[in-house]
Amino acid sequence: MKRTLLFPLLACLCFAAYAQSKPTATRPNILFILIDDLRWDGLSATGHPYAKTPNIDRIAKEGAIFRNAFVTTPLCSPSRATFLTGQYVHTHKMVGNEKPQVFNPLSHQLKTWPQQLQKAGYETAYIGKLHMGNDDTPRAGFDHWVSFKGQGRYDNPQFNVNGERLDRQGYMTDLLNEYAVEYLKKKHDKPFAMTLAHKAVHGPFVPAERHDKLYEGATLPATPNKQDDWNGRPMLALPVPPNPNANPNRPANQAPQRPVALAQMQQLAAIDEGVGMILKTLAESGALDNTLIIFTSDNGYFWGEHRLGDKRAAYEESIRIPFLVRYPKLIKAGTQFTQTILNADLAPTLIELASASPLANMHGRSWLPLLKGKTKGWRETVLLEYFHETNFPRIKSWQAVRTPQWKYIHYTELEGMDELYDLQADRYEMKNLISDVRYAKQLKDAQRELSRLLAETK
Image (cartoon, rainbow, N blue to C red):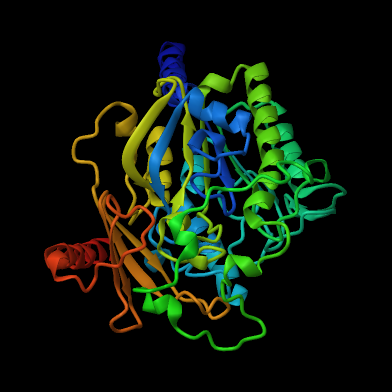
């Protein structure tokens, strides 16, 4: 090749390489912190009466709170798959926590936002609880992997670290925090997208030893729905068939001696300490303000409301989650959003932020326009769903529509047991209006909207 042609060719190649690398250099890092079973009001920033979560609260103080964030299915495995895929459960098929023989292979087949970000030039990491089946082996889309089988254990757990199983001494939450900080301290030549998925505050509700007496004696205010007699809720009043292996979501007065609400807040203290370590590490590396930080949960949790424990039911305590976001380049400190967002919105949001290729058949929508003040046309109604699990016989399969004022719950396998609530007049969901002729129009509208949303997502 002639020298006169060589230099222009080299110049073109250099420019092309520069053009490809420049967007990567300007894209933000992503830190997605996912808690297990933390309800929307479980933080001091979201109104908890005695819990102190200063480091988590800092995300909201320096960023934003989404006041109306919900999961499409209030259950661990389905919700986690929805966070990853942007799809409803009836599409991604991770319908429950049971049947590892089905969900182990299915979890390897999901098309996820980390896969898309990895292809777009991000360095990706997963640290913590996967819980889609009980398989702890690395999933596609992650350059760095730290996880454990199924639910794992709080004390002296075993981890799968990039394919190698390691026995560790210590408390699960502390060890996951250490793995996260260790990863963040490494040199990153690309923008990173790290998921930190804690086992806490999931049962068996074991706090770190140093937090065992934290908040001791503290109690929650009484609410009307903790005295629910299930009048107007025939689904809850159905007899539960005897099953020695089942958890029928017993009333709170049969719970263990340490109240679940207290134990979860004790567990949360170690998570809050870890968030403080993470923020400090990002600040020291100069990456803090170029990192989109999201803090949320895979579902809510009942603290005795409607005489229920656990989650799965369509009431607010189960479906509503905390959702905090910090990214000063797009979010003014102290912002509060009232628009309704879903866990299905995470995947399209992060894909758009990272300038990655979209996934097919996502049901969620990016909330980046909300950060830019573009609220016109945002959704008013959402579809929610749950598929009955034999090990939790109390709650039957349901589909629900929720608007800022109304909630309609349709039990798909039962006749004459549906529920309708006016959320503005009845925030504790105590009066089922399904048979009140004065609300026939609202019921018909809700049923029509349910049909529309099901058709739209199928």
